[in-house]
Length: 324
Image (tube, rainbow, N blue to C red; front, side, top):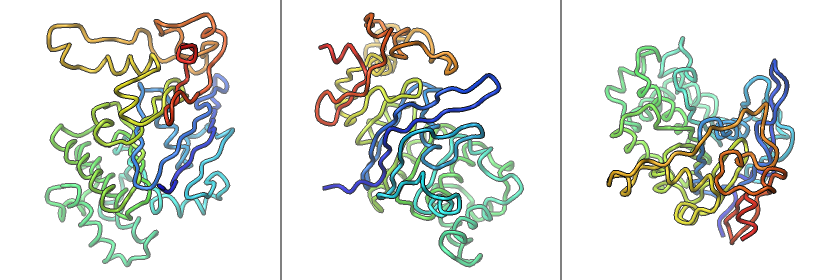
């Protein structure tokens, strides 16, 4: 039986802004086992990154978790002090951030930033840490790695900075790696290499991965399970083959139909999900997806469905599916 590494239970979060407070995450639940990859997909603004930041206790100013639990190896991270959580971050859990330019410190060299992680979490001397930093840069295919150690983030391209972030996240061999669009700033060739590297890491050291991406092809290749998010909620969750081959939620179906495929090569127009993700300050009543859904019923406008088990390991938040 696979050991449960991360368990998120009924997680909700809200933000306070100048315009008032709003619910950003609602009742998020999923598990990741040791060595397993869970992919999270959805349009921009659906809460994917906020879910990751909640797990890392790094919610932006104004955000707070209002409900739920986040268990890592049976330990509730929400009960840890800031000092205790700092020991977990970077060592047991690490995150590749979506925007590497802002995540890296502009006044410290690349080598110093990677070495600092090793000195804090592994107790290495500065010399030892710099040796490991060099190996980490080479591992993510950074050319002239010795030279890059002494450079600053502004001297590198966005794609190069992204690879530095990946090297920094992997340097302590974390048990859980959270990757937020890890290949977004990279060209196609390097994207493939980074995906292969993450897969190799999972196989070699049994590192679990929470992979956030818009690329459903990457999810199909990398993940064992997938969670589809919309407007701060999980609307479908299950084994990747089940969800991608037999999607049940209208939103999941829309995402899949929006991908270029063989039908579109024959001159057919690409499918588009009408409308856009709603304003969190003014979410619609009932199911948050109903204004964009072509299969909606009157009930959808009044009540928000719960995430319900349809078959073993396959969960859907949809009245239409429940009625079938």
